[in-house]
Image 1 (tube, rainbow, N blue to C red):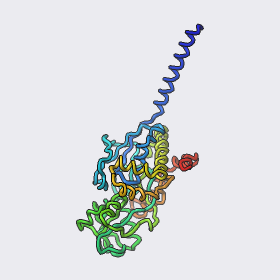
Image 2 (spheres, rainbow, N blue to C red; image 1 turned 90 degrees about the vertical axis):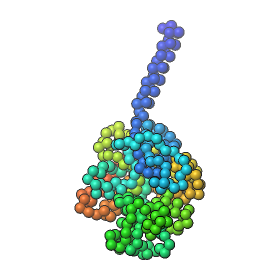
Image 3 (cartoon, helix red, strand yellow; image 1 turned 180 degrees about the horizontal axis):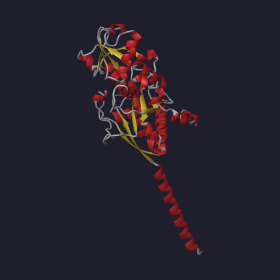
Image 4 (tube, rainbow, N blue to C red; image 1 turned 90 degrees about the horizontal axis):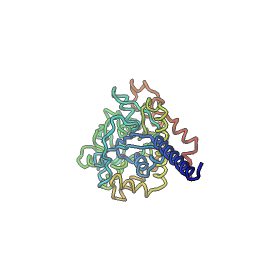
Length: 341
């Protein structure tokens, strides 16, 4: 073949191979719809993953939905922040929210959607009880009103555990009041105390309230914010691969949270509008117990079944609510340990 023709043929081959590689790479990117049901601290790793391009790094095209930044979600200090202007998916591939609330819904709502937990970023009861004037001990709450976010919520889990630990009848010895999980409920005299997760707690401290009790002292397991999928969805090989990639990005973001405080504060400022550094730092510090290997919280699942003990609860075993096989695969491959070397 003439040298000129050979050069042209070689160029054509290179172009064809390049286009094939590009097409293959494009085929390897898996689209994934993900919802975060609020912007609490234990969901920050999923925002970090988006902010730092970890989903793309692991071959995912993620459409991420989360609620707007406003005080409805306990973000009273938010100024600006990123609102993801997309329509909430009707049936997302992955839903990120508490495992306990999902279980409570399944055990009380015939139409609740059963999902399984693949990973969890919140495995220990670590919030606070904040009280108004005149309440100085947990014992003082007997006969009083305790504020929570709503039935079946993580705050409800804590109210049930409080009653159990104090030996109280949850119906007769204390009033559990919904829609009262911020300090404005104390200001208005609607409740005597409330269960405060990290953002309302930081806001209450800034408003001058002191914690009545640090719930870390219980050292109790909880099934907090979890990567939740439908079991049938996970059975498809491509979906299982997508879930594995998502967990890689999640674990990577958890390592960034632990290893780079400034990055975490930057993401809180950019995405959640938390311009007050002291306020944001108080929230960040509350996440020190976030597990570096975010396995599903099996003990928290067991605790939930016990606290919601009922005829319906007894239909289930802990294994009905989680699948840790993907996390074990990442762990046994050395991937999780490599994030901290």
